[in-house]
Image (cartoon, rainbow, N blue to C red):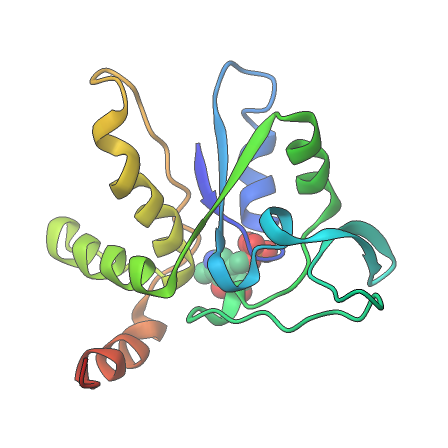
Length: 159
Ligand SMILES: Cc1ncc(COP(=O)(O)O)c(C=O)c1O
């Protein structure tokens, strides 16, 4: 079960139905906002969880091409799932997410949100190593119509 993780709501919603089953749970964070992957315990919005903060406890800015993942904290359930090892958390760069967005448009004829494209990017980079009869469920948290201009603008930029 793979889902993108910003604040963590779509991922925890889908993980909760599978937590008691023998299913691997994978959360995919943006490389520039990996609160679980790069954060440390801290308090924000009244909750103690993993948080991107500096040595003085000041919250650091997150950076992601997807506005919905541009958040320096994460819901505390994810911190618990990470600490107990029940779920694993990986990160995906903006470029990988955009590539997964394009690839899914081409292959499936659907436009995934750039947020969801982070989860898809992790599938694309790991699928070949999975057992052939394995089943991967990806939570498509939203549509990417809203992201077309962002991707088109990025395509137009000289490399
Ligand atoms: C389409 C979509 N997916 C995912 C997210 C990330 O949020 P969360 O991790 O809380 O599900 C957002 C946030 O705005 C979003 O718009």
